[in-house]
Image 1 (cartoon, rainbow, N blue to C red):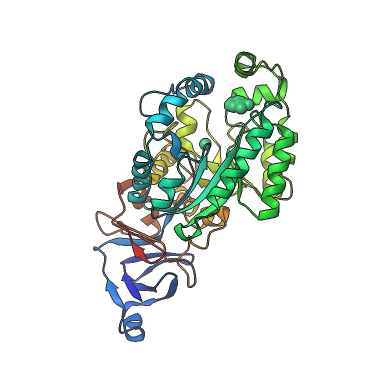
Image 2: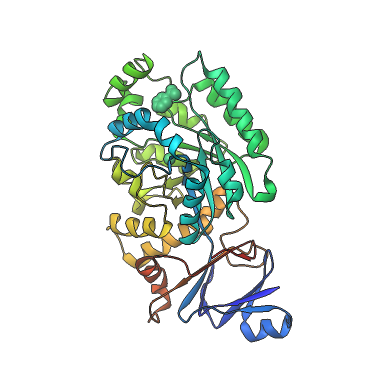
Length: 403
Ligand code: BEZ
Ligand code: FE2
């Protein structure tokens, strides 16, 4: 048993002061430090710096590790030029992305306080790094392919990758399914994959309505995707509408990424179906996709980094700062609190993880953030956390310290 003491503890009931947390692999008790020491006299006491805040470990629900070698190769600014650059440079980037490159990416996540993440895996190449990394990984095996001639082979490979990711529970790997996007997955394969997710209770995610180009293509078979599909796939119309695609997920809550171009009606449908959104503010900005109006959003959302294929860092703290600047509408303090919730309890609910809250029986995943000075008001701690923190001072996963 260990006891960690911090000046401030983030709990569902607000910030506690003068308290500690007793924990082993899971959280046992939250009480004044003295009380815990009397009750658990053999427990090791872990102290934290003055003005430290104990948070549940942060959760990044959407990241692509396989493109971690990209820095200055892919074209940013507009979605289709970016997608063309992905197709042109994919092989080179994936070749350059060695297991160590991906492990370094996991380490960047860790140093920013991320103790669990959702890895979107196109090829299964990051499995080795995710096994070695200390974090809990929801390993989203991705299905991508619209060509009916090749879809059977693609689907068989997809099932093999799911199997491979199912054998590492002891390394905290949780198998899951990702559908690439409405424009890139054959509707029949889509139905099979959703059925597979339901049968095995896999967490399910899908990119959805990221760009204006995707909107035009799905609605009216035109826009920038027209030339893209003509050139690359000899295809003149999409295989599905947005409505058909979205309704295929009815009855099975799914984590949709981006949704920047979703209509009010579509967002209302996502809300009614219990779906959630991964909001990647920097990725959306860098690929010219627009802004998700989170101030009006009823659908629960997480803030996530996406991959280094559409971002400049994997720090969740950098992402929260970007979200704070991008969403200038509405009260600042409330937004900061909502953003912290989006990477803790809300993200845990989305990925169906038993962490994300400092309450008894949850997994003992913690991120310690040290503020540069004493906060005048407890309610301002989320804002000071986001504004002042470059790296976590300590990080624990299932009771073990990793930073
Ligand atoms: C496809 O495999 O069909 C596909 C991949 C990327 C973008 C669009 C379509
Ligand atoms: Fe993504």
